[in-house]
Image (cartoon, helix red, strand yellow):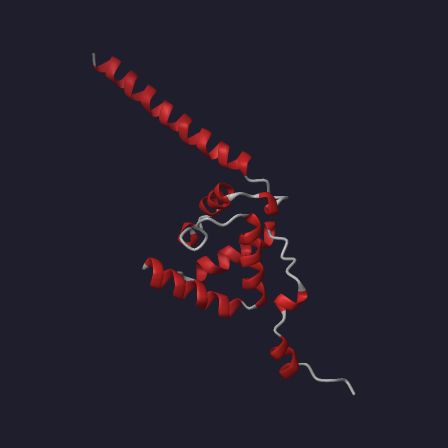
Length: 137
């Protein structure tokens, strides 16, 4: 009787482990690291979860890979401003914190998959150029 209970418990545990493995395998299959522009909302969500970036889920809710890449480009072109903007939005709208370590991890993870091909005029602020770039004359 006790042996049978242990056997049933072990079978339940094996089934749960198989389900977890299947779920992780599904996530692996879903994410195609070569084509962020083809990611849908679910792939973006799974990517953030898989990369331990769940803190960013409220900020990235409903965005696809193209939009995630655009966000990444904005972060790369003005990192501190975007960090403060995302931190503020997460705190005010979702009552959650955005540690700098999470933000840096986000940038690092997107370095591997993001194309970061924003048009030049979106990456470089004209006023910044006028103030900081001098003629070589």
